[in-house]
Image: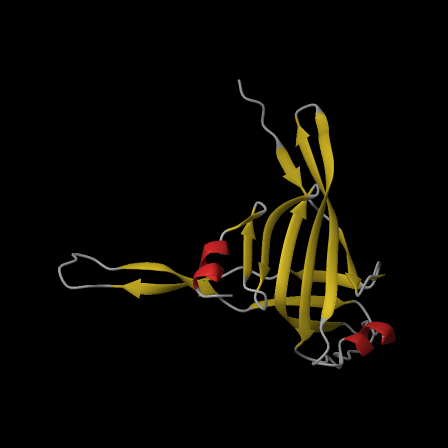
Length: 173
């Protein structure tokens, strides 16, 4: 009988420009990688289909649990890129308990899209949400690359393999 393994990741820490935000970020939503597809149809074909044509813009959001002046200052200049790192621990379990615990790290570079002023409500802590447009995203698990996208450098790698190397060569860049 096959043994079932289950992966769990239930917490993380956010770093902004190398500075830990431990205890400040309540939630972070990493960017979804959305593939743009273009329809292909032609005379004589009995059907239509879609083919890859690019990667859509990426966005991340961070929900802060209060006002933090140092963070607010960093997210106030829409022309200055910010480097974020989200670090977590990926745990693997089976019927006998924990098998492995490895780092899961997401690296993001992007620009602030808003300056949240907060919502004030009696007896409730003021929370804010920062939005960022993401120009590069890289995900590593246990030091191994899973995916890397850099829109400004025209890089798209999967499992450490640059899948658009030929494309860049073909267009001269």
